[in-house]
Length: 61
Image (cartoon, rainbow, N blue to C red; front, side, top):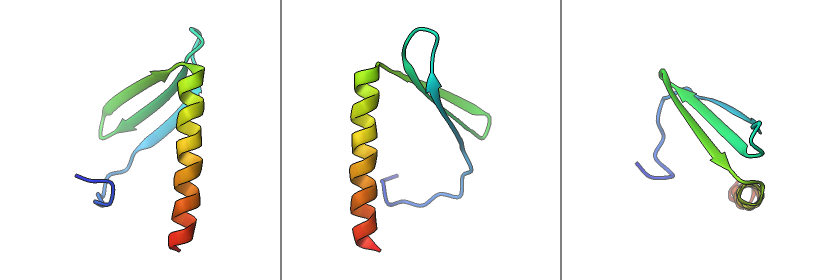
């Protein structure tokens, strides 16, 4: 499965801080839960990548 492969799967995404000072992305789909913890610096890098991807996606439309 690649980035352009479409799947008919519904998922929930929650994002928030943990009590340990990490940023958690919590993904739940089909009964599977995936917690992903990042330190604040990593979370900021991910946010920058999301913004860059959004900018590129806008150019495609």
